[in-house]
Length: 219
Image (cartoon, helix red, strand yellow):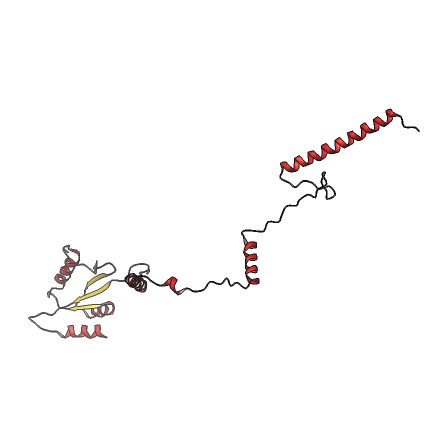
């Protein structure tokens, strides 16, 4: 079939249209890559102008475990020691007075730590210290107990009835008990007494009953 001029012009027009579409598509891709910071697309390894597209160079790690590991391996290859050596001049004192003061302070802190007061962690109060007052009748047993109570508490006691307990210190109590003048009472008092006060009548002297109580308390 013979090619007419009209048909040839139409084919040339279609070919120019296809080339323009390809160029528009290529330029659009280049604009998109430039906008997003990407490398221009490489078509068969050659750009539209015939030049080879440059690739982005490799950037090694500057910080982090990978960078430290790489630096250690490089130093090991180059026989460079990375060990920290002891420098005696770095820890030397410049002032003898200051060094002596620091040493005395360290010694004082150590001694203070060794002499920490013990804390009483016992629950409840301890039992009172029992004081038994023994002697013959009308010798002044009640008067002695009243005087001791007034000495510790600064209060007057009108009459002595039974055991009397007072607070003599922060962690100590005293209990005063007047011992009866019979053998059973003396035996019981000798069992629970911590301290015995023996009163003797000066007009009569030391009696045998007081000596018996003394033996009971000693045994």
